[in-house]
Length: 119
Image (cartoon, rainbow, N blue to C red):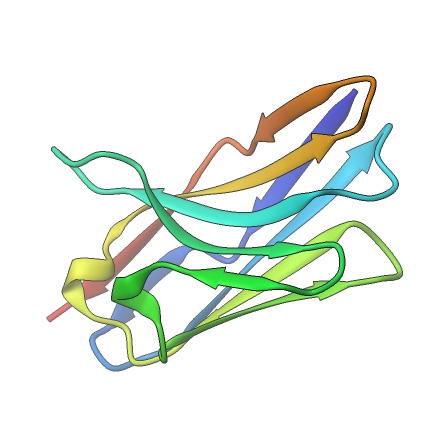
């Protein structure tokens, strides 16, 4: 089984920076996609940023140029560097990992971490 441990959420002023980290443990040695989604009150969950095992990146339109996703090779983990944060970035951020093989297609989610940006 796979567990995702998230860290780095908190309160920050507009224009500030914050880093979110997510590490996977358990029966996982690689991944198809891994990254972050977010959900604000009254809105649907949306893509923030994901990365493939080979390093291909995908960013949501609202965070392009401000957020940077990276991955570690020593362990199954990603870090999201969030810069120039805006109040509209306020949301619960969820780590996600997608594992796809010829044998199975599985997805796991973290518990969510709150990011609040004050104006």
